[in-house]
Length: 341
Ligand code: KG4
Ligand code: ZN
Image 1 (cartoon, rainbow, N blue to C red):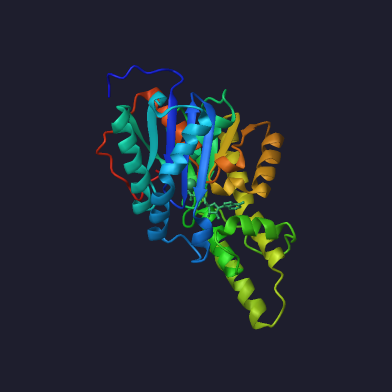
Image 2: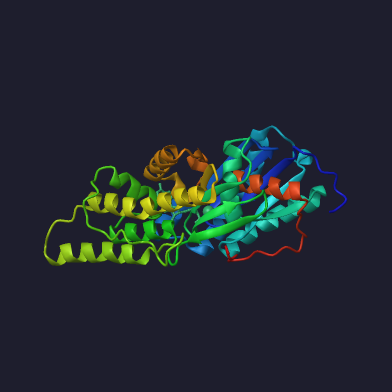
């Protein structure tokens, strides 16, 4: 693999299958040529969460077609692809193995390099597609279903986790509160929709600061929502779910905005980016934008479809690894969890 002559604008096929989205995308340098996503979330919704076995089977039945569409819509032949970037972790093992095995076969068949991508690094890289001139350093707010952290990206391949959740990830908290409110899975978009009809009037703890610094905790907030709903029920009082949703949403997200802007200010960094499914939340996008404007920070927000799981971000991270000359052996294995710090 070291003998590869590297172009500066390679055609990279990205493949993502870590959870319930089967996705493929093609980029040429930082330019996105195609971006395909097939989701099994409507199938999973019946079970109130992702069933790993179902996710694997769904990936297997669609991966071939999703990749074929990505190539077709990009207007490129498979022989023109320079490298395949694929998520190898973190995620559901069976689901990961489908995308990873497909990518290995593709790379081996065409004699091109394989680039194993850490899913979380993919979320961090999504911003590079939004602004082709974006360069480190920047501060990133990462908020997904599995991770929530404030990160200092120092170069294309080096980053420092400044702080993050001490318990649940932000997306996980949204999903758990959605369950309390009997909303469908995945909970985030349903809470956001309901919150638009409600007011931030339910008293919930704002003390989410964990042990100080950039860390914070969601467990107290989730319990407070649960207690509030139970008490209402026990007293036979009507529960205004929209107000609960609006109050929870602001308590859960305001802290993220605050910590992110604080980190940029303290480190003297002028650019802020964000990534992960929770960043698709309109309230978060608006409050982060307003806070960055007030602090004189430049905010680069990936479009919503590049915040939730997608393959464009995997291809984007693949490009950073390509630039660094980091390729993976065909023996690369899937990993269920990869520590963030
Ligand atoms: O990044 P992602 O698609 O998958 C992981 O890598 O985890 O994030 C999924 C999470 C879920 O917990 C989902 O409820 C949350 O992102 N999410 C949202 C919104 N859209 C997705 N949370 C709040 N508001 C949204 N609009
Ligand atoms: Zn994700």
